[in-house]
View 1: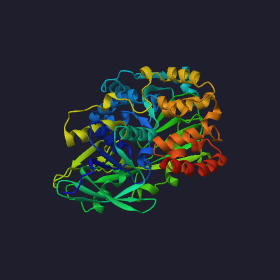
View 2: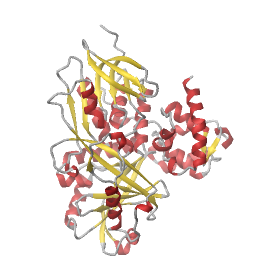
View 3: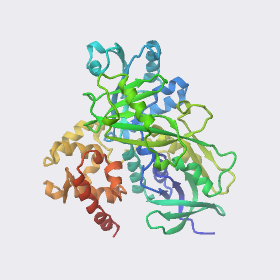
View 4: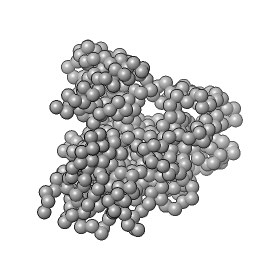
Length: 500
C-alpha cells in the first residue's frame, strides 16, 4: 500500500474549504488545504460582506436556514470581533412594496428565532424625527432599524487558513488539483503548481471537494461525476463602490420593484458600497465582471430611494463574484436556496465528500457537519476558539483599540485603527519591540510599512500584489500609484526571503 501523506485533503481555499481544514486540524487530523489561486480569490472575497440571518429568506420560508444563520452570527462575532462587528440597517417602508405589518412581523421573527443575545433588536423609525431620513426621498415617512454584522470577508477566509496551519495543516496556495484517483483505501491527488507548472502527487485517506464554483468541474476532470451527484447553479452578484453618499455608521436596505433588496453600506471610511445583483452565469467563474445591465440596475436601485443621484460616472470600483448555489430547480435565481448540501460519494472505498452551496455566515457549522460525517461528532471544538487575533478581552474592540493606541503611541491614529481592525491581537506579532515608525522597516508609502508586508507573506500566505491590496486588505482603494509600484518592487524580495 502506498504511503498516505494526510488523513484529509481539502480542495478549495474559499471560506468553506478553509473552515473545514481548520476544524479537521483542530480534531487532530493531518490536513492538506489545496487552492489553485490565492485564498478567497473568488466567491469568498466578492460578497456583500455581511454575517447575517438573511432577512429576505423568510419570504421563501427558509426558517431553518435563517435560524441557523442567526445563531452563527452570534458565535462568529465572538470568535473574531476585530473583523466582524454589528452594523445597523435602515429599512425604509415603501408603500408600493411589502406592507408595513409584513415588515414588522418579519423583523419580529428575525429578532426571536435565532437566540439573539448581544445584537440589538429592531425598532420602528419616524424619518421626520430621525437623521436616518436626512438622505432619503420625501416619499419615505417611516421604516425600521435592525442589526446584523459586517465582516471583512476575505480576511475571514485567511484567518481560518492561518488557524488550520497553526494546528498543523499544510496550506498550499497556487496549487491546482488536476486529478483525484481512488486507490486501495485512499485517494491519490495529482497537484500542479500554477506558477511554475511542476506536478507532484499526494495521498490522503479522505477528500473533501469544497471548490465552490468549480465543485462540479473538479469531479468531472477526474471522471468522478455521477447521475446522483447534485448540480450547482452559478449566480453572479456584482457590487459598485462610489464616494460616501451619507454620513453615519448605519447602512440602508432598499426594497426593489422586482422584490429583491439592495444594500447601501458605509465602506472603507470614504466610500459607499451598493449591491448586489443576481443573474444566472454561464462563463468562467474567475472571469466574472459587472455588466452594463447590472450597473444600470444598481444605480436605479439607489436612485429610487436617495435624494442625491448616481450614474455610471460615479463608480470608482466594482467587483463581481459567482455564487455556487445548490440547484433546487427554482426558476428564478433570486428564489434559489442559500442552504447547502453535503454529498457523500459512497461508491468509493475511501471517503469523498462534495460541498454544494453555502454562505459566509454558515461556514463554521458547515465545516462542523462535514467533520461529523467523516469522523463522528466527538471532538467538536470550533465554536469556542477565537480566530487568530480575535482573543480580545471581552470582545470589546474599542477598549482594545484604546489599549493598543497607548501601547504603540507612535502610530498615527488611523494606522493604529487599521492594524487593530485587520489583525486584532496579532498586530503585536509585527509591532512588538517597535518604539518608532522607523522600527517598521521601509516606508513604502501611504502608511504602508515593510513590517506589515513581511507579516502578510510569512503568516497569511500572501505572495502577489493583489493578495495584499485587495484580499488581505482594501489598500488598493486608498494608496497611490507610486505606493503600488514601490510595493510591487519590494514584494518579490520579501517573498524570496520568506521562502529561504
